[in-house]
Image (cartoon, rainbow, N blue to C red; front, top):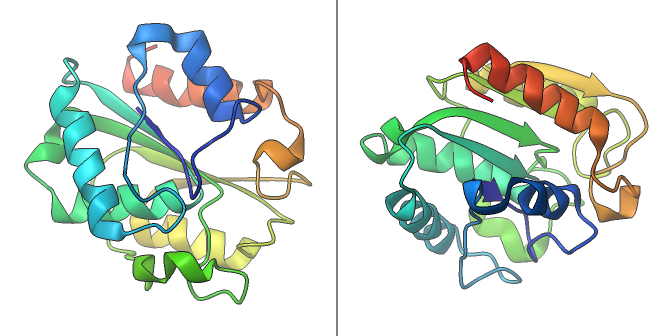
Length: 181
């Protein structure tokens, strides 16, 4: 399940490339508030996406603000979250950072309770929305593995990653550890 950040992921974003590659095996959340994110609306969108998903073995692939939505959803929606077997969270933003989008202030403060399922946080050492120390602290609070990479900024379309093969390799290794491909 694809969970983009603010303004959705455009056609050049690695999430869109992955969704195209996966075809009908992938779905994407559809909140009404992409540009002016409302946390409750995003949590409801996650509810709808999970309820519509036939698979009882969902892996959520989130980027940026989507990471914060997934973490909050997993903590608040525990009965529904049983369908989720893992999370792949890329470039979570620091909701306390000066660069955090004003429009997304409803997502602050970030919940950092244990998520109680397998997962990995992937962050870049030069992300303008999250320092390496904060990314590490988020992963630790969520009790997820952390993979720090070098020089990819916010790991988004502006990073010119295309399909982001290194990320696909990380995701494949992660899902292989779940016993799923």
